[in-house]
Amino acid sequence: MDKKEYTYSKQDKLKSTTIIDELFTTGKSVSKYPLRMVFVQTENRDNLPLKVGVSVSKRYFKKAVDRNYFKRVLREVYRLNKHQLLDNITKPYAIMLFYQTKDRLTYNDINDKMVKLFDKFIQETKIE
Image (cartoon, rainbow, N blue to C red):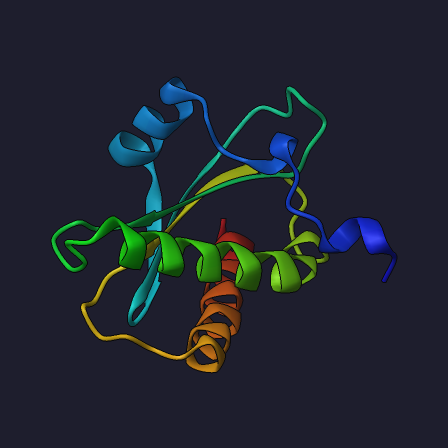
């Protein structure tokens, strides 16, 4: 693996409100408790295979400090494991990752769940 594959640059971030709206209206979902991934196939405008956003609900973590911590962990775990997705997808996707529990899992637990979630996503996209 070269260094470029382990980045999460500004171009990789999902910011388009139209794509985010499309994710919530027509997107498909896979879950591996406590993580959930909503995804939709997109047009390859920026010549990037993935656009990713993360979210942690205010319902579970009232303090912004706590929400920001779990968003940071989600982004880092994605950054280290995204090669698993890039090696197995052929079309560009927009993805939103959610942390959906009030349980405070450790970094290693979240990492294990993310790998399993990516496996489920790969299986789901191979069916299409």
